[in-house]
Length: 536
Ligand code: NAP
Image 1 (cartoon, rainbow, N blue to C red):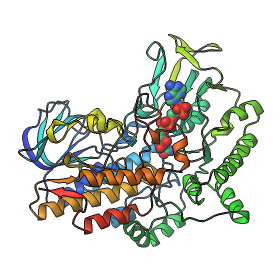
Image 2: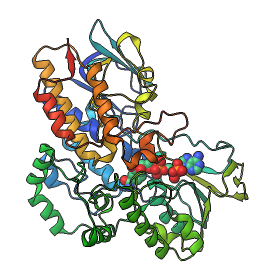
Image 3: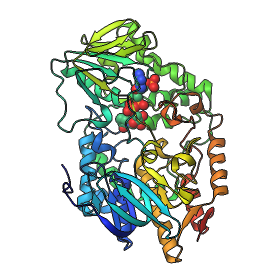
Image 4: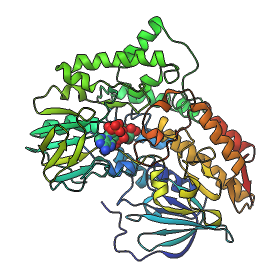
């Protein structure tokens, strides 16, 4: 549903305190905080409604891989108490409803221009302001710009020969039609085996005549064991709500913080392995200390998971093809699934291993691999995103001296604390590269960042500071630290989207921050009058 901005006249000559790009969870909370502080704000959103990635990603089975009770904001206790999740892992429509509820509850929609894509943001050094321009001819001047543009919001263009030749139906999981897709009686190809594919394949297979899964790299997947949320679970969560919120605010959370440096073995290790099958998904994996720093331990866990796959898939050859190898569990984002492996026991599902028989080209009627051609009615591209930097680099962002963000990040993204960029004053990134971001519970990290950004704006405004900007030296030191803590971790060995390795030509840099105490650190920086930032 569009939010009433179709056919509107361009917004011109308007000056606001804060421009917010994106109406996902980050943009919604930022608008709320800015208005609460008495600031004028203009939000922009490319979609026809709020929800960000949950607005676009409507493929079958799409759901969160963090338990719903934790995939919730904590900044409003009323909101926490009045919203009720129906399932352990919330499905996409319900997460979208949660975003819509927040927008309505706090009357946030009037602050956004929907169906409006920001094309450029240019800093005027003399004025100390940003000019934001959109594809609808809007031109808005803002003192502050908050890029709440999401980490997984730009679907990757399928880099497959002949991708535009196919004459049948094609869909990208990251841009799914709002009216849904009926696969009944159809021959369907799914290309990719990341989270989006692993969630949708079991449901497509229930409907379609045939499904052929084209797999380049098998993924590790743990069972969601999804179920309705019992009243007692919700009540238990709410009883502990204040303590949970305080833990997040103090930076002492179990997630995103990595576990302490402990060696696990024997019975304790066996219990942790067994825990992988208890339905807590990524949280059970992150409970294994040093998983990403101890290759032998990691391999033991990999082998444990591989054995389970072999047990779940009846055809041993298919099972062997589905078994992930060659990278550590956790180094590519593991999936949380419902009936994924069991789906390969169905008569109408076939697996093509692209490592044995790569795609030569798509044709007008199907997919040709080195083993021959198969015809399809539908191709689903579950081929992923230009993660973490894609949405920012898609815009023409120009800082001091007209320098573009593309130039500043030519060798990979550089930020101070994942929050600001040297040379780009008064512009914030939400869960940007160099912060825990995609390796944390995103909604908690979004909340932390918006609180921090709001605090920084309030601090600067209270001191009549015209510009706040990351110091180049502080940024360099932070990036050196981000790289240093990543060294020796198994993340660096995998061709993952965390490394930018899934997009041809993208610099290979490990983008999230995996050190400890991030929240404590950014709060200290603020308490020390924004140490590492320059003001004018
Ligand atoms: P993804 O994890 O990047 O997976 C893309 C898949 O497409 C991979 O299997 C990849 O193979 C394959 N692929 C890409 N280009 C290809 C090509 N040219 N030929 C053949 N195969 C190709 O993307 P995603 O599944 O959309 O998930 C991205 C992230 O979004 C997830 O990791 C997760 O963080 C988030 N997400 C979360 C949920 C959830 O909450 N449960 C659901 C969906 C997405 P290679 O591995 O060989 O590159």
